Length: 320
Ligand code: AMP
Image (tube, rainbow, N blue to C red):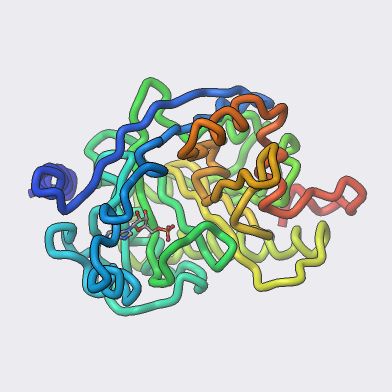
């Protein structure tokens, strides 16, 4: 059975048996500087009774221990290579949202290693049939991650324009070259992005070669991110970051905090990698209204990243 069929079958069974919870949402779009932000409104996440997540003290203890070690059998899909497993996300707002976990405990504060990237790429290419997918990794305490066990997440991109909203800015990079690191002028926060060489990837038949290529791209980008960060900010804490990988590019954004403060002081939303892909999640009508009425969603992202300093020296900004 293909990975895609297996995921579909496991998902339907887990949903039917209530081993997995799917929350209905509505979506609102908002265009900012050419990025069609997708705001997902998920009221059940706010109303959700405690018991949906941790009904008893016993279960609470289990969740605190580690939900990925071992994963719930009803959510386990299959192993990918020797070091990773694919599981279903237990609490999903996107059907068939999967998680690639390390089989042994590794820290979510570690960077992605060649094996992690290879497992993620293989899943991204095969998990949802012909539907494109987006992989993301929330790394470190301010990245929006809720689990300390190393895990990448992958969602299918459905709809008429199956690309993350931020891809619109990537498309505008003039004379884009695979393997070259770029900065997107429209973004007011520190970030780096790199186009992937699909010809090379697609013609590669060797796992070692492919994982080597992906990690070369990732670590080149990570170096560039630290370089940009040093130029634009003086971080006073451990560096957290968000990683987004589509079938065309990788992107990294360093994070200064997890929660973005909206219009009122007491209105805060958690932002993770998907926020920087242009996909924001809100749980209450107040949060939804605050984002809908916000005059610049890029500023919300800037608040949880590091501000781009217009006075910094851009000379070597276009390329490493
Ligand atoms: P993050 O919040 O980025 O660390 O991602 C953790 C992911 O794991 C979220 O998407 C959660 O919905 C999901 N999750 C939490 N508990 C479980 C569990 N017991 N089994 C599977 N997925 C889970």
